[in-house]
Length: 350
Image (cartoon, one colour):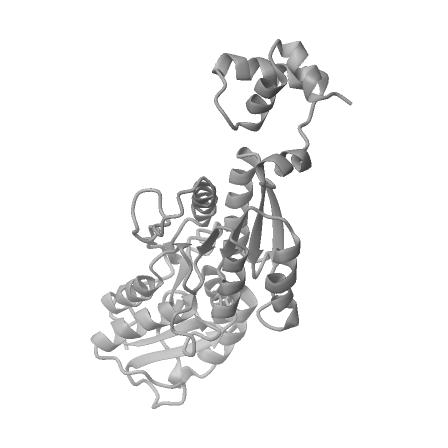
């Protein structure tokens, strides 16, 4: 098996220089680095990560905590993280986090303690004070994407403003019976992503004079309705069948908390013989890659960019820049934009 001394001999440099060139730590002239890399490639030398970690205290491994791997937003964030880590020479250890229970506790109390990682990226998780304390005791940088909890670095869109924008779009079109398909726990966890989106929706509808109503309120009365469901296509479909099943109480427009919920809702409307947007306007959130196929109006974000930036922030913090501002240039939320398609229109006359 080739050794670092073989690389150094072939490149005509010292072992220390060869090590610096291959690890990226310490100054090496660019031409020298290229010569060392070429020599290592020629003889098939691969640096030992275990040996490097003994010297540097780094594992070149980032732990990623994620609640779902089979939903588009989370999978796209993960893709952005993985691509950026690979280009930086880092590995990834993935923890698929349960919503609650002993398995969730083991991720924070056991697995993150046992596995050697340089930093932790948490995607879309509402962290408790105890979980945050456990991460801080590891003395590793923690970067969160979305979710809630008091951590140093967090990347997120302004979910409250997303709710305001979605409701305002439907109100501007003239809708007065508007429902919000919110994520589960939206009304009981106001600082969560579903909670913030629901709060923004209700703020906008209240400002427009639409009271919060239940599904059993008088038929045809103006107002806003909030229905909680899983933020998935099946969740949107099942909630949509219930929400749209009674003609007298049916809203004319729905804001779904995710595009996948909106896809399920559109399918439920079709099942009930309703036409989108003639009978029902629908707006979602995310900018899903299939939103165009559904002709869905959506508030688009860029989860892949969020994943990339989370890695950049984590690596910057590993370099000693542990500032609270999680963005490279400012503390502003991640950008979003309203993409209007054919799923929203003015309500039908009468």
